[in-house]
Length: 316
Image (cartoon, rainbow, N blue to C red; front, side, top):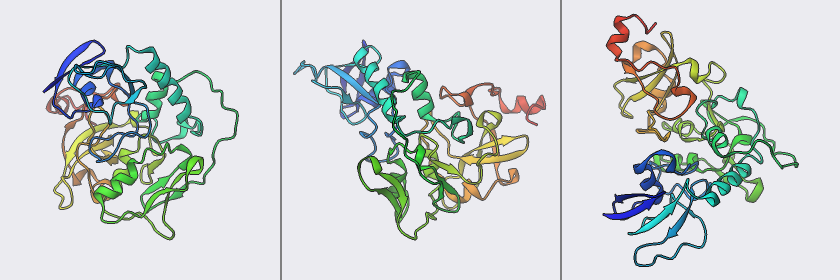
């Protein structure tokens, strides 16, 4: 174990722990935002630069500060390291600049976006964004395309976090999409005459931090804050079968993976569970799911024991 100090709080972490995960173990406002890092996806991180922090002292052996802000998701803690996150004005100013950069080409279509209410970019913009923009050039424009029978791609919303390509690399036998071109014309696309049809492709929707990849079976049906999330499971030969069923009355509007408080899927699920079983009779409902992320979907949802709600006839 090594000791590291984050925003004045000293804690012990295992050797090899990144600054971001150390901050997550501490919790609170000291946790840097992250748009590309995903703990379940090997090799993620270091692309969006949202998690930059200031290292005021490198270690007990070498207490010199690091000359530049570092990406906390790929920088390991050292014994005696002192890190500033929310306590550094330089860090806060940089996060504002990064939000402004991410929004250069991002359309202001939150009112019609299915990701509204669950969008990490919305949260990031609310916490660190500016009221206005200095950008005067035209935004990139792409046509919406189906990249498979279940997924629609909105490239105008994409921030190139690479999570969807990592899902394909690590969960599927053959990746048929990737990042095409370079620089400001880079885009996510499928290879010529290919469609994404593998059994775990739907997880790209869950890991996408913005509304670039949306569920064709759920598009425009409802807003997430009108739905009630329930933990549910079924017997499945492809995945664990542990999901969140988003219901309105007795009707299931969509199925997603179960996510932790950082919006990361706990267990990846197959397309069969996600898209083909929208009948409530297909699932064993365990009870209401507490959304512990700070988000609009965590508001106005019941948290009482499931049996109490059944007894009071409140689940209709």
